[in-house]
Amino acid sequence: MAGGGAGPREEGAVKGKREFGVLSHVRYRPELTTCPHCGAALGYSHAVWAKPIQFLSGIEHVSNLGFRCTNPDCAYGRTVYRSAQAEARQVKGSGYGLDVVVRIGHLRFSTHQTREEIWYQLREETALVLSERHVQNLLEVYLAVLRASQQDLRQTLATTVREHGGIILSVDGLQPEQGNEQLWTVREVTSGRVLGAANLQQATAPVLERLLRPIQEAELPVLGVISDAQESLRLAVATVFPGVPHQLCQYHALREAAEPLWEADRHLLVEVKKELRGLRDVEERVRGKEEQDKADQVVLDTVLALRQTVRERGTLPFDFAGLRVTEALDDLGQTLDRCLTKKGMDG
Image (cartoon, rainbow, N blue to C red; front, side, top):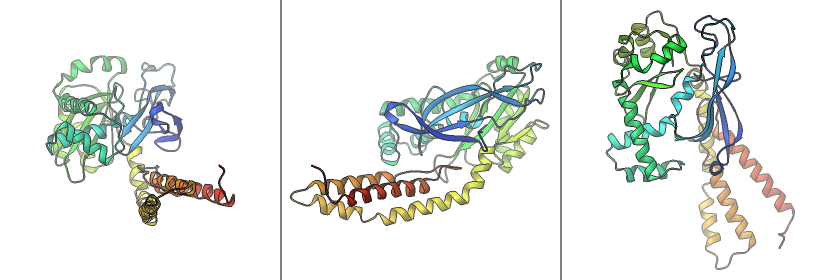
């Protein structure tokens, strides 16, 4: 359940682990704004967890904010409601996003790459900081997620039901590559447990019903379901859990609403990169000199800075890389202009 401020998450700057430097800080709130038991408003309690996470698109410092019922007489006033969207993006106890886990699983079991081949491909295609051993660890996480459907749900969730009066389900699908099968997961939000997972070629309503049926057959009290607005998913939830409140994820709604702006921003970034295609020629001319002076070193440093700047990647719904890149290029241009006005270089 994503949330924060006027939308599903709040962003700022925060110092992450030393090796990552300054990271974008994303805070998620629960989509649920009222207590499912008494209807009172939920209020902020504490951060359930906060950590830097490496995603395929980059590194973020993510916080999952916990909320509690504000009614002092509520029987479940100590229950902490968290963001299902934040839980769906991360792996408990790991600094890697679920998208990384799914990508590694796809490369291993769909394209049959070795651990070393996966490691090399991820290093070439992404900015991930990981070792070959990390690839093996995340492969084991992928297999553990797929085995989640084999557990005894009544026994697994007995404590959760007793403490919170029932369970809240989150259903989401993640696609490793366009056109490939999706990994669909069902989570229990208050405990963060994965209750079921399956690689699905087609996410039709009947197929998704089969993913949800084991939870229904366990006869557990379901307080609510959270998902995106995909029609097949809405139909599956209505069939398997009739009468159960179904909250559509604000984060997914905002992603869809921001899609046109994000596409325009992506086009802006493409145009910026086109303008900088001459950097290679400039660099080759400078490096081809028999002797380089201080001005040449400034040119090479500038080329490197420009390349690093345009490597930015954006993510929906609010992270527009094109705007960040143009602002950074403006700052770099102003710095160079100030240097040129000095008309010389200090020794």
